[in-house]
Image (tube, rainbow, N blue to C red):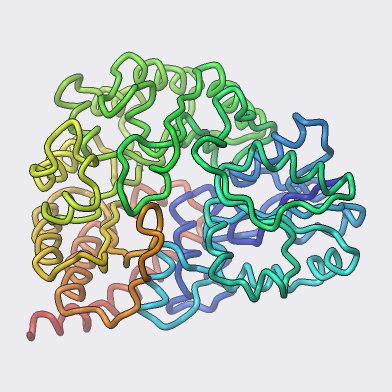
Amino acid sequence: MDVVITSDRTMITDHHGKEFLGFMTTAPPIFLPEKIWMSIAAPKIKVNDIGEPCQAPYGLRKIEAALLDAGIDAAVIDPDHLLKHPEARVVAIGHHDYFALGPPSSEWWVLTGREPVNARSFRRFMESKEMEYFRRKGAKIVVGGPAAWQWLYKPELIERWGITTIIDGEGERVIVDVVRKILDGEEPPKLIQVGVDEVPSLDEIPLIKKPSVNGLVEVSRGCPRGCRFCSVTLRPLRHYTLDMISEEIDVNLRGGVRGVILHSDDVLLYGSRGVYPDEGALLKLHELVKSKKVNIAWSHFSLSAVKYAEENFKLVSRISEMFGDYYKGVEVGIETGSVRLAEKIMPAKALPYSVKDWRNIVIDAFSIMHDAKIVPAATLITGIPEERPEDTIASIELVEDLRDFRSLIVPMYFVPMGLLRGESWYKREPTEEQLELMRVCLRHDIKWLDDIFSWYAKDMNPLVRRLISLFISMVKRASRGFLEVAQEL
């Protein structure tokens, strides 16, 4: 095999079939030994006789597909089985958060002063006997993925771990050129930053050949909203055809994956030419998934699209009802409750509504999802360079207004990405307003935690379910002191 594609254990896992458990890898082990923490969040996954995992991260599957389509012998290989391929000349590595610098990992650094398990796991992987073997034999190490930018903050590790090339941006086109150069004995560039004009067109995006983790399938790529804190908005919007989506779902079904997670930076903009949800395109997309007889979840909705799609077409409730009377999950971005700050950093996030109505958009969207049995995992950003105390207070008040809607809300410290990449990380002691925002979010999450866990854990491994239940009890007990301090003040 010419190319092995891999990562550390926090990536090469199926999280017990529960994608949300993967977020535990962004934190340090809390109340539990790291070994047990990892067994919950990132268990070892079944492999075949040559070390291929039965499921692999979608991004790694795309790189694998690009190389196979180009006639290059490549496969995703579990990190424990790399030495089954000693002849490999290229080790390609991808990751969501190599050094725990992205959200929400960076927040855990600030709050606990402890290194999250994703960074620990990746360091162990890079210093493993397997990776040391490939360095000694002169194999070239190529790194990429959504966290590729983090290597630029760790130049000493580029040298120490023998990194040949860093690919920052969509890699399906450039990975083939890089690997061919290596196989031909040429030296590839040290850093490749894929610009807007260099991203693959729809025809150039390969379809996965083998199953992705928990059935994740991309339906669109890019976003038209232009939020200043987000790197996704730097990429043009492209929609997969229904035939492409169907083919990738079928790959997962043949591999034994019985669910589908539709992935896009805003699934409700599938088929649109801008910020207006397209009723026909969305219905056809979900009818396709329904025909596969699988459960559904979504990676991301925008709150303005939730409001527009429901108020104009009843789409959110219709789609939810299409798949039956069970709860479904999705990630959403609140980001701030401050209209002043929203106007500065994400003026188009509210479109087709006015950003001045952002607060009501959020509340209306949460109400719609609550009624439709869609459970949002929502993010808030604090510590943005232009943030004032009154902005944080506005976010606090918004979270309080969301108390009656089933959801999890997670405050995250600012990370310099997208058009704000040149700014500094938030590393200061949190202000009293920021601490109160954390308390308000914690109260909200504790209120809904048992309700959400009861349905989320229904078909979970019994031992894992008991361990998580124990962890939740510990979190509740530990939270009392933090919340009581606020009441005393």
